[in-house]
Length: 300
Image (tube, rainbow, N blue to C red):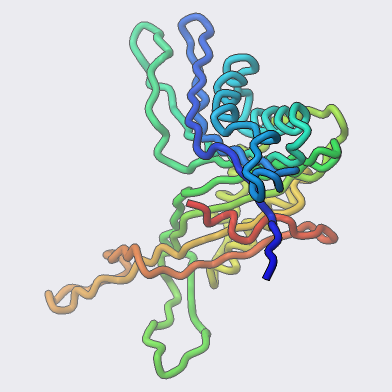
């Protein structure tokens, strides 16, 4: 039977680039992991082995470093937009560019004498961004997100009234620890031509909404908490039409201290790392169409 070529893309994955900006004795760091995926008129390289339309992946890597020098890195989203537009506009055979970015945060270490060039890696979440640009000049998609943001409520969480069958052993509870690792991806609405969003400020606001909703929600289920978190983001940020959340339930089970003659009044827990419940959902602005891939929040 004859075969035909389906969707395809290529590029350089996980180019680590660290950009240091020096303002006299004060230094600033942007630490990115950049993955480039390009697609377009690539039939010949697959079916005939012709590289005539192929921009080498090594060139895409070099472009990342060169752009970090020439243009700086104002934000993960801005840098990704600049790269995506470059690849599509400069190569006839490339019709679509998808740039995926992870950003690793660094905090400044206070130092005697006012030196401001020492940093400690931030041990919290990883910031993410993905920009896709199509060559017609009008079709942009900007996704921002985070992964690995671990949060916990030590009370104001219950879990009861669920379905039970012959294999159910989990006891109902009216007071439990609720802990999760927030993995989220949100889609920005279209913006007027030439508008330059403050991506860093948008990220910090959205992160703050997620944390505030988690802390403020009296939870009867992790699903309820997820919906409250997503709803707060969409309600408070008019530039965000959609957010998808993936929340693994980081289970904390009461330790059985009865063999030692001790009571355990919600004080001592066993933190289990696996298996774990995994709660995922998308929250949309009314009338919006879902466009965030359902598996994007689960990328390693």
